[in-house]
Picture: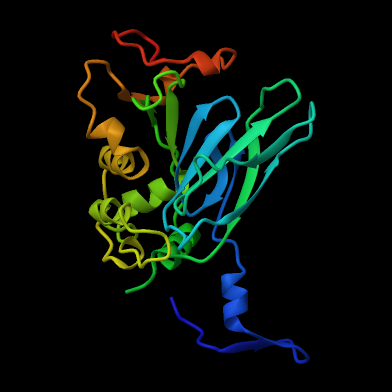
Length: 117
Length: 142
C-alpha cells in the first residue's frame, strides 16, 4: 500500500492542513442489532449486558475518552439513546438504548470520534 | 512500524468478514445481581485474527490497561502476530475485552464464564435481564 505525504489539502480556493482531515475522521463505527454487527470498524467485540445496555471494545484505542454519537436505527415507541458513562473508556464505547416502555429493540448506529492512542 | 488503525483499514478492504460460531457468556463477580453478559466477536476483527499480521500481541493490551489516558500506549505500534485459529482468537478476546476479575482473579465455586456455540444462546429475550449462566450441563447456556 502506498502513502501520500502532504501537509495541506486544497480545492483550489480553500486550503486546510491534512491533520484537520485525519483528526476529524471517525475512528470507529458500529451498525447492528444488540451486540451483532452488520457493519463496523475498529471494533474487536461487542457485549450485550442486558436489555438496552451494550458496549463495543475498540481494537485500536483512543488516547482519551472519545465522543460518540449513537442513534437507534428506527424510531418506534419513542426510542432514545445515550452514551453510558459508567462503562465508557478510551477503549470501550458504551451505549444505552431505551423506549418509553423501558425496553429496546437493540438496533443501533454508533460513530466515535477522537484522537488515536 | 505501521499504526494498528491503518492495518485494520487495509485488512477491512481486503478481507471478508467472518461471523464467529462462538459466544462468550460471563458474569462479573463484582456485580452479582447483574444478568449474564454475552460477548460477540466482531466479524472484521475475526477476519483479521484468522489472516494474521494485523493484531498486536495480547500482552500489549494487558500492559496498556495500566497506562493512564493521554500516555503513550504500546498496542498500536507493536509488531503484529501471525494467524490464529478461531479458538485462539476467542481466548485472545477473553483476555482483551473481559475484566481479569472474570477470567483470572475469580476464586469462587460458581461457573462465571462459558464459551459456547451461538446456538446455545436463547433467542427469546423476553426475560433478558434475568439471564444467569446454567451451572449444570443442559441444552441452553443461559
